[in-house]
Length: 408
Ligand code: PMP
Image (cartoon, rainbow, N blue to C red; front, side, top):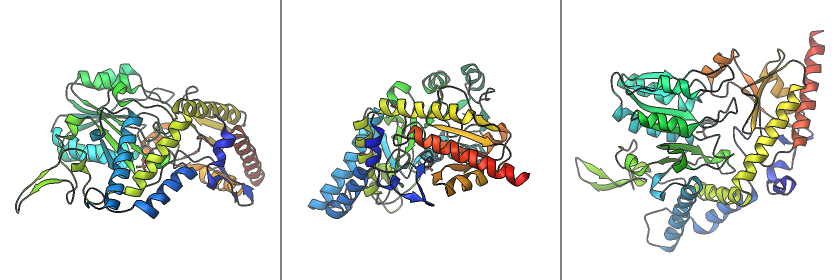
């Protein structure tokens, strides 16, 4: 993988911020887009735009082909068995809310259980709290081990025959670890529960095969994998999707409408009421082409190598605390430095042109488990280099000096 050639394809990276060349280390929040994605969306807007699935005119057919073509790319990218298993959504959050609001609400009742972990992003936590409150189900947590990982023994102990849903993130956006989804799915299935996967942080960084994982639902966002905002998808096994009630109603999702009652099309249409985000879907399709051209295995190796390098370099700084397991990090490092508040840390490094994330990362229960209110996080993608990390280390040393001096 030739990172310097790849960098040339991302126009946004070639600018100065606060008088310094930009170092972008916040791809975990949102990645940047290559020129091919920007151009694909521009071409669609300039030449092909119309509404989809409606008109019989030429632009209508082109727009429909572009939109459905993007769905086919997503299906192939995740190795779904058919395009009908891919529902376009606004992103991971909307996809998980769809599973919770439709599937889980209909199968859960008093005494049933939903099982998640304390490392979940709020998007994979609050929807389940809401289902538990509405249905009388119990929300149970697989405990975390000392390094933040979960053990399959604990999964075995937590999941029971009353469990209806197990929902776990594939890669943690704070700890950077990868959960053993295939094994957790096997346990869930033995108890008759469905397996839901939050794929927001895994899909950009590794090859995902939903059939091999044997998950029932898988959610991800386009904007974290070189695609635009406003688009993502829910993968769901066909027989499950076609037995789920829609949670939004309107045009294009219906089969037959009468004055008092209506029937729905099969999935995915029944979950895509109204005019969809067509240009964003085109952009997501172009992002998948781009990632596949580079190769997901190459990207995975690059991101893991950078995370390891960052972990080693950051550990050299006195007063740093790095969170999560020592090994197998997927593209990010979360840390605190002395008593400097992460927001201050992030502000000082930003003044040197370096973008990192600070805050609770939408993981307040995990922050509480770590015993902190917030952390800093540097996250890496295919356009980052070891020099970017060296710049971060120098900036952190500068920050440390700045605050130490202030305290003297
Ligand atoms: N889950 C995880 C693990 C995430 O990192 C994120 C994004 N920070 C989300 C869910 C939510 O993604 P989105 O905001 O794109 O819906």
